[in-house]
Image 1: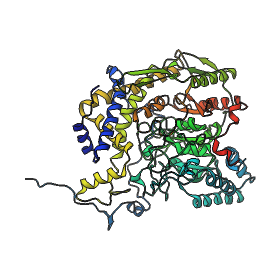
Image 2: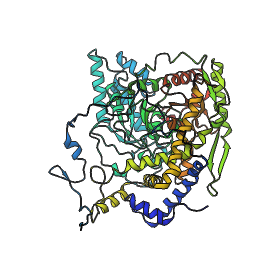
Image 3: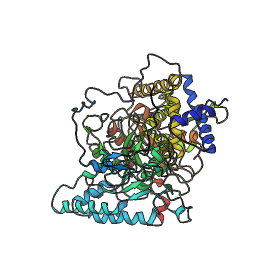
Image 4: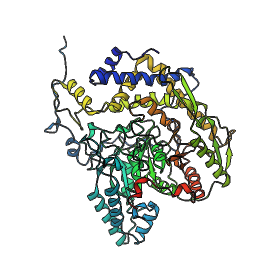
Length: 106
Length: 531
């Protein structure tokens, strides 16, 4: 059976996902993806049927069960320092990152 | 019997009446942990010692001092004549996927190894508010991606208390192993494709995946947002019911948490199954999986001991007055795993993009260059192979034409699986079931290393559980017997939306009817050394 995900497609996916792999890792993962696709292909036996609703989750929410929208009100976190302190690098309350890739527009 | 081996219900009852002190129960639990757990999971990958192989390794973070403060508060409340809560002084553990304020919350991943949660998940907060004493955070598959606990970045990974050479199941494997070995009475886990029920089955404990939306997901690190369900693991059905009563309910911080009233799940739990219609389906007594070479679907009967356990349980429930309905068709359950491969990966891929070494968590130290390079280096070092695999598949499935080819078909399969359940439970339909009775897993716990690395076969260990996640319906796993090798086998009871009380009733009836069975007297091997 053909490999649906070729090394070229895999490289493109890795780039989009912001991953980097050594050659052994890349080949192992590519093989696993192709193996999983053999299972996923079972779905191809399903004819797409416009009468079958595509729902965001299995449970149907009713007027009784659906929670109301909460008021669109800003609620401050009690201690923002606790959140900021989780960042690897912070200065004066700002997150520090390396240069952001950019290009000059003509 | 140690205090920690008593039921949560009894412990809370005795503590509230002043017959037990919460600190004594805590001491018993800590003593058990010291005896059976060994070193906690860590990023230190030193080789396994001989002693490591004789321990359970359920914990990543033990919060003994914090637990003592909680236990002392419970005792103080009892002394002051105050209500100490429904779970007063009950020692519990938390899957390390739930945020717990001031405590490391790792998702068993290097990329969150230094993350200390600034807030507490709603489900955990409700347990603590009810007087539960949190012993710590327990191991799991990395980001809940797995069925054996072996993908955790925190080693040694958890071992099965019944046979330490076997996996505890996953992803809530640390939770199930902790409960089975008396390291706490209860644990809170999550179930996306079977991650509470499968480890519960492997470790001989009770696990419930509630109806989607019954328990808030606020503060739970997301895997697949349309499928994730927090839920209880316990040593008996009544304790699981008690725990759900505490955790369930609306939450303004989770727009998917339903606002339906929470029943008293303990009330009427002992009403028995007389008149209940309990179904059996041939579609749940076989397993299908793709041939690794050709991709052709192979269909096999489940092992005889698993089938027999299920049929025997049906006989037991029939003797208790249930009406058994045979040949309930669930034809679309064969699409459960293929659809799960697509839906869960697409959602996981989306959820994992937030981990980038900027806002929180691990940042690659040796990073050179610009921000894009920082992302790549951090994610390369921070994620294990399983999350990377899931992100890659999710991105592949999200792309243009493939979205039509696979993703829409997966959503359609989900709707068709849901329709199977609606037909089975329809009160005006041909089957009118209260409960569908199935095995929880196709086999008992497998040996460590048997499937790890083969992500496709590993996924198929969830084949009998995943359909309930697609449909959103509740499903309970309870111990159903022991295999010829002396390993626990799980029995699954599936019900219609929000019918958890019915499942508890049926599960409790089975527990009572088999209370004197020989297999109930057999305990996990790790407990032999402490008794």
